[in-house]
Length: 157
Picture (cartoon, rainbow, N blue to C red):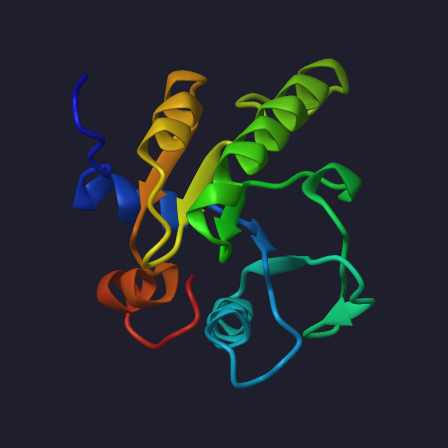
């Protein structure tokens, strides 16, 4: 079986240009946590952030949802701050959402169309499954660091 590899640098840059809405799974309400800091920066750069975390009402001024399946709006990218063993279930939720989007009139491509697994989150079988289903998958990279690499500390245009 071929080893998973991330998209090219150009593809990652284009992904960050196209994305509007990011659901962040595992977004902590604690300001010192990496998930909170990354989400706050991505929000400041102009992305719409949807917190996905059970038992939290809101984070960063945005209503939080217990699961991806509870999110009533279109998601472009799912950013994961969870342990690798949770990624299989998240991929299944993404694929179910894509199926739901196909029948509810969202414009192509189906949503969510991208999955981002943060630093240290490595689950190659799940990443391959998402990719085989047509999703763009980035694994074991920090979305905030990549944003800074391509666009600097400014709000995207």
